[in-house]
Image (cartoon, rainbow, N blue to C red):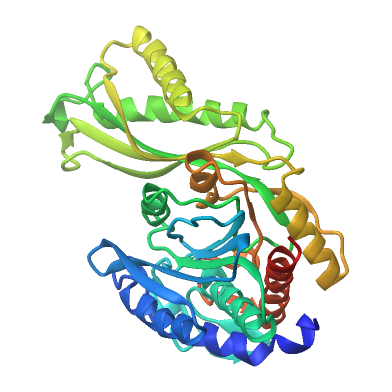
Length: 408
């Protein structure tokens, strides 16, 4: 079947534009996007339902069943599905319907919600991350529904909430005992196939001091901010050490002091200080061990100065992930990319964190990341995606679907 001639650029861009025009950050919520997608997916003959995760923040689940002895395939935009019953094999396509906020709109050269196309680029919040990918997925499903009279297995599309923050949408999916053999996460993959990515640990460090008038300040004062400076100096040493570690797929781990707050007023010695830390982890690292090692290093500093009192509190942990290149889903996407784009794609790892780690580490679902666009365009002012990338990805998705659903 001629996928390239039947997947139309205009179909993809029209859908992507409509999705971008509906705000869906954590303030607006995902309800309106889900309702819009519900109508689209129902028109394709899919069974659709919304799963409320938080008020006005649902997941969307859509499915269509072919023959009972075939495979099941899921397209997920921050995912949720129903059990697959007697389906022999299944595959999940994963994207997400939430976006990050637009920031200061005055800095945008184009309205982030008008979704204009200029110079063969689609501009708007979510164009790259990742409403463009969702449009590519849905048009690939449309191709199968319109051009494959009989297929074996199940197609599942899910759009999930809160990927940009906690991954709660995907976690709720797994709580429903999702059964699928493999998954594709549609995040922007820089024209590569990612079979691994870094993890993220967010945590807060607190230091304490003695509240006094600043006129009493001297080297013997117990200042929480000065105490925190000592810990930050140690973090800088750790950062340099981490550059010496390396994973062949995702590079070296990192640590970043992202936020700091402390004190009451400039004429008062600070009795408290807080920093928020982002630690990027490798697949071979264990998050709790990392935090334990950090406590040991800080404890050693306290042996030098017993005024140094601190506390570390975990905020969010999203694990790193790695799957074998021999996994069928990795090989299937490689085959499809080679056939559609006539290239041998690079298989590598991603530095950012996605819902892939939840699928693999919690759901035991072999997964890869493959989607249109470049991660450097995500979360930016004047976010955009090249239209050509949307079309190519949709064609690859359709080829994956076609091969899995008709070659059992």
